[in-house]
Length: 166
Image (cartoon, rainbow, N blue to C red):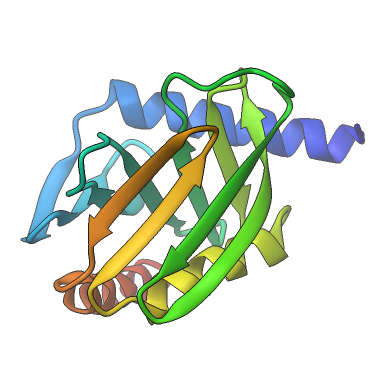
């Protein structure tokens, strides 16, 4: 593992811990999607909450100084390879895509638009194609998200991210 890669993982982990420890200001809600602003690290988060039987969430985060990141909690994960997680994603408008994402402590898959560009772009593209349903799965878990309000949430979040970088 390269020194630059280790530093990027450390910075990402630090920012994630800051997010969990800091109070976030809710900006807007769109069904099971919400946008939050975290003043401590100057980020806007787009958070999706599952609507299916299996509880799950994920966060897309934009920074003023770094492009974007994805955090995908992997609850109850079988730790076959603690360093990487195989996550399959699909939507009602696209076929399945398998992502190999680095897993911090084996339980949190992380991708940034700098370090894991292809995986990040595949996730965002599949998410963006969803009109009614977005799904990710790992191990024996399948997590479903109602995507009917996603387009409005992404549009608002994208504008906030653009304004953040001015």
